[in-house]
Image 1: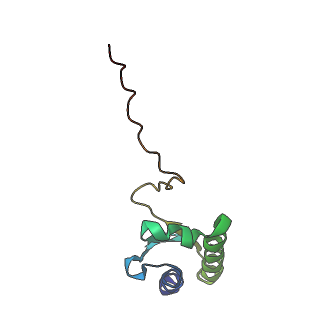
Image 2: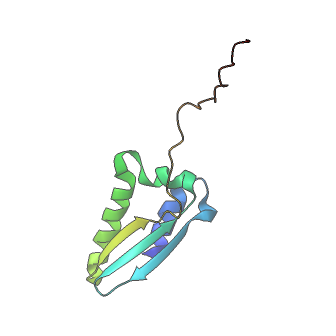
Length: 99
């Protein structure tokens, strides 16, 4: 299952060499932790979360055979900051009139 998650995610992103999938096994659950380039997070999530939700559905459905619940989580080491649409230019301070 880990290989499947890794294959799908690497197929979606621009930096496949930076994709890292870790499997954390619990008593009743499996967690697949995804670490990837910050620029690729949006591609894995997809519009309105549809891509990651589809991946989670497939993984969870396949894990039922093992009698466990599977989850796919994107791990972000740094919080994601959306780049602003406009770059604000710093204005120069008003000059003082000559006395």
